[in-house]
Image 1: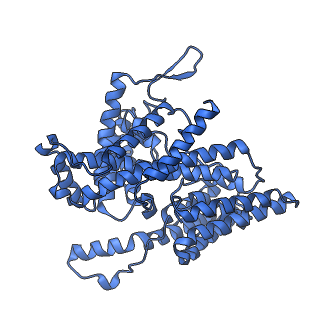
Image 2 (image 1 turned 180 degrees about the horizontal axis):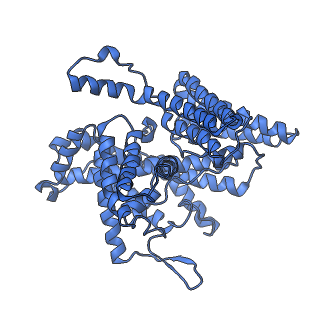
Length: 490
């Protein structure tokens, strides 16, 4: 079930009403909590099974094994046995992920390498939506239990709700057990302020996805399908629009997910923090897909020694996390190349100790009392840094979007040919797309210190509601052709 579908428009209010009807029923708090969690599991399985009910068995199996591993780790008589149970769960979950996501890729590549036919060995199975997201979420639980950051839970219903919570089930944020699971173990009360803020965030997410991303996709898909015949200027424009497409698509999903969770009294972690205003590539990665970046940092980079090791190992650790991040996105050499590209950009900063240079908001200053204030415009230096970082990111997205390394190379070479100085192709709706993309970036710039860009409670009521109605009309009137979210394929 898609967030931008008619089905979800009926599904969400119905689930909301039943959920809070249970929450205010005249029963004990313990029973109330269990019933709410059980209903979350049922609703989440309906949400996920709407796409393909057969894969419900897979997510249930992952949930049960991870829940059981937590109990076994907690009961282990020695650290050695506890580690063995943790490793067993990691191998099991990664094995399932590898089977569905990477098996056919490696078999095909092996066949091409040795010039043999491998068609009879291919499974040709559909990739379960969101498998990379909920698998990493399950892994975080067993690892955190082993590290004694969280106590193993005996409440299997709460655990199943933690793994399958429908707002973030198929495309994140990738939640940690230490943040999300405790929320399913305590009673929740309805908060009007939290719910209305969630609705605002959902609205902004829908605008990002339906108005910005889907309209960008119309131009991008048409250009990419015919890129050998296009001018350099057209290819460059399409690459820039894809940069905004993937941002509007993925951060829009995250906004809808986080906002929806707020309707149920659940707080999810922030997944995007205005990444295209970054002043270097390290800042970009602190602001882009935060839940995945911090997952690799905490569970891979730091255990390998992080940056507190000799420089040779720092190089190794940097390449490991970026290659894993690339490969996490899919079984294609383009993702490996994309990860390698970003590792090469990131490496000089970390070796020189400048990877944490920009941790404050761009175009800000600190007063004598230590309070941070925003300036309306960035300095010339900041503007050039943002543009340079953005250009590097755009180049990376070309590699990411391409179907092969050869296609990415050809696209880049042709894109930077002399025809880059010609006028780009104009198709219906391009001006509208550029206008709404500009509005997106303007609003996010003005509200870059906020949790999300429609966190505008201080504005007079009449202005706020006028803005809401304008956004709704834009979604209804100017929404592009309805498309699935890009990150569903990962």
